[in-house]
Amino acid sequence: MVSGDGSSNGALLTLLGDTHVQTILCTTNRQPMSASMLTETCDASRATIYRRVDDLLDHDLLTEQLKIDENGNHYTVYEANLDHIDITLDGGDFEVHVTRHEDAADRITRIWGEMRGEDR
Image 1 (cartoon, helix red, strand yellow):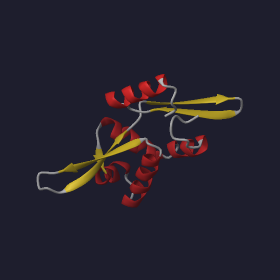
Image 2: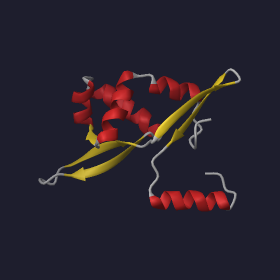
Image 3: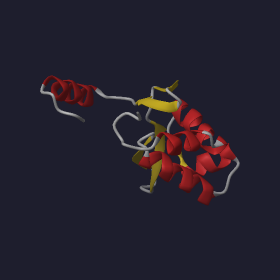
Image 4: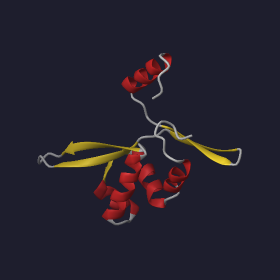
């Protein structure tokens, strides 16, 4: 079961098997990066990077943040949004569990919901 987003295991495994996705996740885990920086790091076209970034955002594996430079121009940076991924083979099926980053407010909300018996 993929935690929290209802995505199919196969789609997530396929996404994670992509070398550009792996590079995006590894580099944005170290520091937030813009699409331009990812294009250089991944040695891929800007269109390819934006497709992979969109897929990762859809699966909640990246977060995006708007930055403003000293000239007042704005740009978006992306940061990996996961701690770890567990893949198990159980009864002939793959199960994928993604543990995402959680800030204190999200953690308290999740715990409170669990105590009240709510699914997140």
